[in-house]
Length: 75
Image (cartoon, rainbow, N blue to C red; front, top):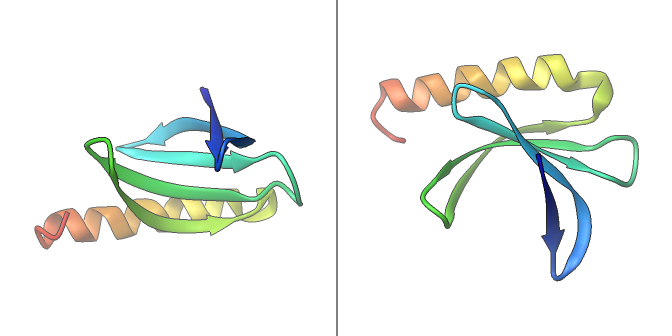
């Protein structure tokens, strides 16, 4: 896990979830989370987002979307 800063201010932490998908967990609000895939150092693909209550569903949705994009050779 590593800390994440946006515009020089700490906003949360990052950690891998599974199959090339990572989670950015914000340290404010109701436990907001963003799920993404990354290529190289700059290109990120937003796959899903939600809060702690929808975390399991959001991860499943992100896995499905990334698998579809890989299958279609769009990622």
